[in-house]
Length: 268
Image 1: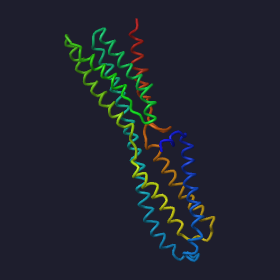
Image 2: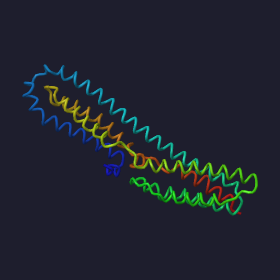
Image 3: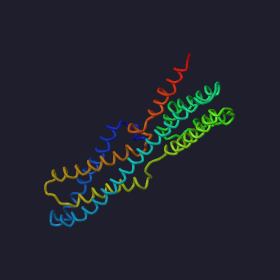
Image 4: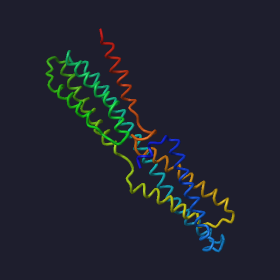
């Protein structure tokens, strides 16, 4: 179902609601003759149906609401992880100030290349569900150079220890980001969402409303509400996909305001 993220959010929302409303109304029109014969065109059983509908509606609404909240929580967690990774990169870059030349320039260039790689290569790949390992190779190269450095002064020893700690944070956050790329609700939960929607619609067909236009309006309003919740859940389900997704803005800010500005100020 990843093809749905090729649509803009407004179009995805309209199509989702239209699909739910259309299917629910078609289902009502198809089943109405059978319900008429079953109930003898009488509303005497509406009270019984309403009891069952209320119970199913409460449980389904609660389940759908909890799933929507869970997807939003996952989205904010991933967004927070991206901010932490970018902050760790900025902190590591600042720690390089304690290294002597030319080691400092070499380390800064490697970390700048990693940040550019995250923005230019990782994010387009994340949007199609791919977690490339190019950034891992760049971090490995950075770590290898850092490990070959032998500090001699006390200031260099402190800076080196801080830089290694910051590098560990960058690597840890990078692994969490790559693991989050394939995240999303499992198919079993989506089955519960969709099957529950159709069962809810099916119960509305068992009400006998003499005025067909009123029945259509009521079923359509219920389908609209469920369709909106399903759209919201789908839009947030994959944090890196679609128009409503996490962006590399945090890395871009680090590149522009920390790395490039610092590099410019150091240029004689």
